[in-house]
Length: 450
Ligand code: UD1
Ligand code: MG
Image (tube, rainbow, N blue to C red; front, side, top):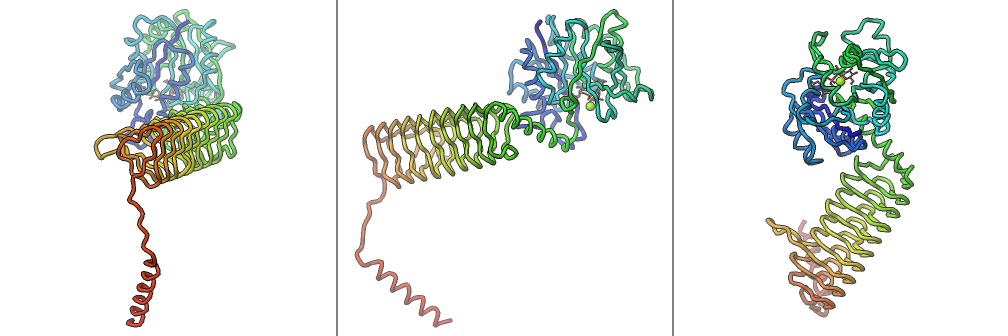
């Protein structure tokens, strides 16, 4: 059965106390809605519709940056969750599979839970995700009878006996498209909030000859974000889970609690990550790589056997080939570092292509920016760049070439050549001794005068 996702993200999130729409606040360097998107992605959805309202333009732009096939539906007035889902009808025109409704502010629903919901569709028309709440507070209550979910009662509309129920509504709903939209058509707003409740579809289903059931998950999966404190807690929970997952997958983390991952970080088996490493978005690290302490990586790829750090910074577009070495206080941006190539100390490599087996000496800088344009540096294989070489791009250094330390290289160096581009050394015999004497006597004079 094909699946479509509807992600509700129109709410303002006033308790975030922010100019930014709630779903754009980030956990693990990804906007909240991207977490729901990732969980739903496991169902290989044929279509995805994001329902936006408050800050809709910003949310739309962020969504399309992640996936430009996402359909955006506008909910101009927030009249309730059923009304929000109704806005997705047009984008799902002609779709006749199952629809999974998720909340954009609820990041931790697991792929496994969603799969259990789609499996429950085999026996029931409407499947609702519920959870046993430690503190049911103001959640909607699920009224069940055996495997039947009879109705959902919103807290505001519940009598004391119903409020005493602890099985609560997470908000996640699964039903086939035709059923979902026909049930929604029958939802009214005659309730304590004057809103169109999505939860009403359960009772309407039974009245119209359809069936409904509830699938349960752990409460942790249903955590919704409403405040900055909850956002911080979600970050903590995410990092704890991702660290455990990395360990489980065969990654050594020397001090797991000091390593920070992004939603999409991939680290291969038998990689070693030392303390205080931060993985920004879009990082893939192959197996057997060693990331040494205090390194910061984003938008980069590190191939097998490479080592990074301590104190290295890999920025977007950094591509390290097998067994490359990037050492302390080295920054790499938009550059490919060849196989076995070493960039070990105090260096900036930006907008560059460096071949295999090359050594980049301490203090080398690719001068890639002229104040207006960025330029490329190309270095061949088995080359040797002397310490403190300035490579003024655009410039090419050929295979097996060398640059003398302290050189400012402004023109191409041909293969096999040694380029020396620095002032010639001059030595003045005895001048140092005479200079010292002069300076010392000047100091004595000055002290007497005080
Ligand atoms: C909803 C459920 C409740 C459940 C709770 C779980 C209903 C009527 N109630 O209540 O049973 O226990 O979630 O957290 O569904 N949204 C829109 N447009 C709207 C209204 C809401 O996009 O017009 C979005 C919000 O941005 C949010 C989600 O839908 O992501 C839920 O809305 P919210 O107002 O938080 O619903 P609750 O009152 O918490
Ligand atoms: Mg809510």
